[in-house]
Every structure is written in C-alpha cells, then in structure tokens.
Image (cartoon, rainbow, N blue to C red):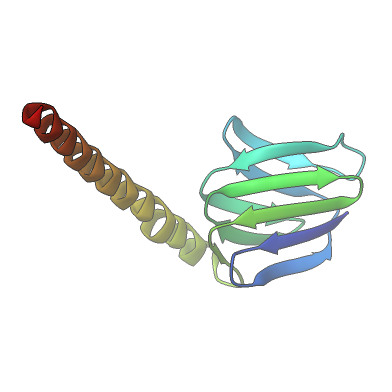
Length: 121
C-alpha cells in the first residue's frame, strides 16, 4: 500500500506500507493491502505504519485500492515514543478541550443575543 499522511500545511509521510494501525472513532483498526476500501474518522492518538510510530490529531482515513490517505489537523513524526505520547496528550487533546470551552462560550453568547432580541419584540 502507498500511504500519505497529510496536514493542511505539509505532507508528513509518504511511503510504501504493509500494515497501518490507527485510532478511529470505533476503536483501533488495522489496514492491510488486501482489505476492502473504506473511510474512517480518526481520533487523536498514535499511528503505526509498519514499525514507525507517529502522533496524529483527529482527521479522516481513506483507503482506496492500494492507496491510503490520512488527512489530519496536525502530526508529529520522528520523535521518541514518550515524546509522541506527550504530543497527543498536551497538543491534540488539550486543543480539543479548549475548543469545547470556546464552543460553550459561543453558545451562551448566542443564547443571550436571542433572548435580548425576543425581549425587544
């Protein structure tokens, strides 16, 4: 299989692979060359491509024929395993928590605006 790991800014990894293991929304899954074509949502976690390990943020995995594309928000490559684990915890999962807080604040602002508009009527 030919795998490409892409972020919005760069191609992080592009090479041949015999086995790819990733963390999807329904748990971990492994792609092998003869597996059926599929699309899967990715969660922040470790990605294993043969013997190489990368840290990836959430994204999308697409397998079509012998091509595999992983489009993720961010990725860390060529670091010790413990540094990759820390990247997942500190960079990717912490960002998700900040996004949840921001969305909650935005929802409260929208609700307040709608309430004020209703009072004007």
